[in-house]
Length: 347
Image (cartoon, rainbow, N blue to C red; front, side):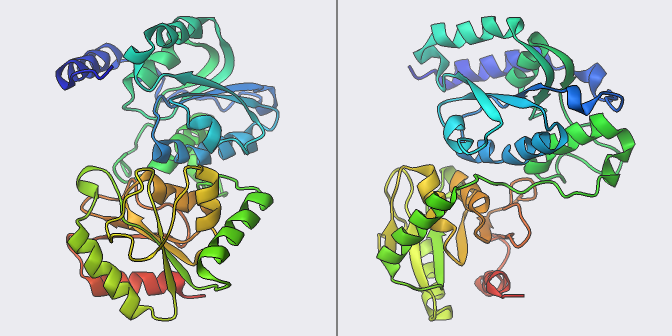
């Protein structure tokens, strides 16, 4: 059942007013004296169903595994994607899944909320500070330690920290206080952890489509709302790629909707299997696409990624060493080309 926007807006505003102060007194909590080896059961709370948002939580799962080697992890999310995204994470053993549309299965949705106060964890991490339901679920679930959100200092704000890093920094801040910046290891990358078998299959699929070539550019022309550029825009950019990179082949990764902003002029790949999509993209030289869950999936597959944004992009740009992003609304195609060449460069 689709809930009217006015009712949904009222629901969100009500939740925010109720949860505004939750966790405020624990922003500066110091967990530096806890015995890391005694943290055995951790709950990650990310009540969202979108692919990109789940993938942006993979660095936190890796950080927990490194920090608490004896811990198992439960993951609370919406929808059915979380078990697929994390299927190759061995220490993530249990998923608590809220229905994506609560009013479609209200009994299941309510039963999870009623059951959470009876669960017991050593540590709970609410991954997004603005999530009202996340804060409330953290509040009502029993745990020895709880991390509600990241506390900014005078030098940083949540607008300058990549979304993939926020929960990791929140955990490090709670564990190490002001010394969290001294943690020498980098925040982990997005990683869907495709198996060797899956990667081999992806390479075979790509070779069956393109032949045994090593120079393949993957593009993703779809996105939601105003992040989806017009067919005219994509036609111009696609033609530019063909002319500028004649020694490369182009494959279009198709969305779930099986549509193309270039009208299927390039060789295309379509799959509903997320890991299969990731394994195919992993065999490409570069992925180019607008801000979307598939862009983050490309990052998680390990393929160097260029994100095409319109406006503010710091929090959600492709996260990773050789990944990059451009603001297409304020830069030229020549500028994008230089970024692509920089990514394709072997150095």
